Amino acid sequence: MKQSGVFLSLSLAFFPIMSTAQEFSIFCYDQQEDEWEWSENKQVFDWPVMTQEQPWENSYFKFVPISESTYKSLDGFCPQGSVAQPAEGHFSTWKVFYVTDAQRSYFAPGKRSYHNLIDHVFLRFSDVLLKEDIERISHTLESVKAINGYRYSYIEGGKREMGFIAQEVQHVYPELVSEHSESGYLQVDYKGMIAVLLESIKQMDERLTNIENKQP
Image (tube, rainbow, N blue to C red; front, side):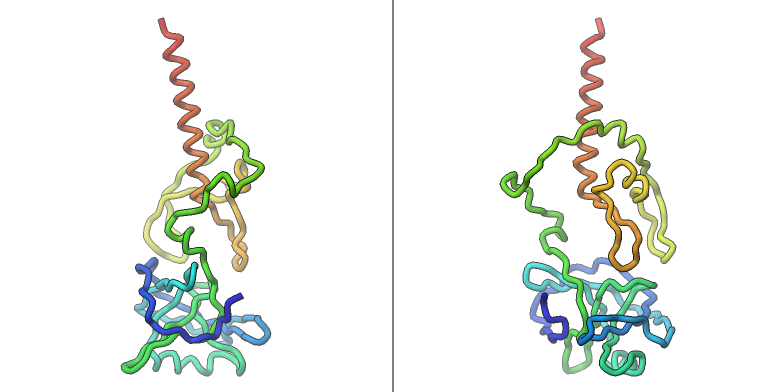
């Protein structure tokens, strides 16, 4: 496991901004005990900042830019031995603060969640030499009928989106749904849905071809 409290320089190029955020809460991370808790100070900050991503070896982690004066104002939010970290809404996804002032910039200490860099750019190892127990996906057309596409907005806010309801996907393709380790909410593997939809299109094409061949 990588050390979470090491300060990093800003020599690596930032990834593009991934999502905007307006409201931030603070949680406290105890580096020695590897435990966290919400700050006793329930203040919610309305900072005009954005969550960004920083490459780190073969992965990346997320951070929130903040001025050094604002960061120092958080000193009293956490007990001694713990560090303050940002959380969007009511969820902690192990972001850290990126602190800046007129003379220096640094990543504040805290626990980070490292994400696979290859998955992030939608490229995954798919060589047959890396796989076992390979099975062709079948009967997809009937299964897909049980899944609907929706337009929706998240309760926490954000732009209008399109996608699936995790519970519907879980009913027919449980391997494409997992539970978020912190919040307990369900999340969908949208990349895996591509294979399902591809086989559905091929099955539909086969049915249409059979109908055309039967016509006089």
